[in-house]
Length: 160
Image (cartoon, rainbow, N blue to C red; front, side):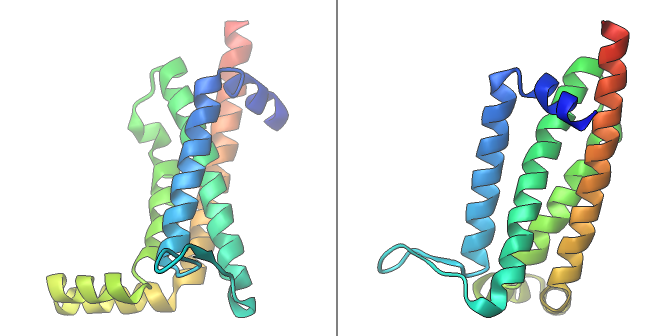
């Protein structure tokens, strides 16, 4: 069932390009915010040994977000569903991206200065629970992939 979904969805090259673009953009932005990529004075990519798990989780969230988003868009276009049925996958993508976004000191200070105590509390929460939040996001994205794959294969059997 799962290989068939990839064959069905990615037979149209625009979904493959969409997935690659989402994966690249999300991976680059999360790696930049999580300080795995440095742009000044020269481009440096470095994953310290103690942060390998965090980097693997970033790659997993990025890849699952790319796959689920393209499947959700395909599902919306084929079945005519709104965002209500596909919205859970987007929620997982937002949780996964947001978990790493506020841990960075520059974004944390910005959130604190803009939102005051609420920003400081949110920043501290996201920094402390960054890994569990990414694991929750991965679980949500896996469930959404399962539901999307099941829905797409059922719809394509009806069409055939």
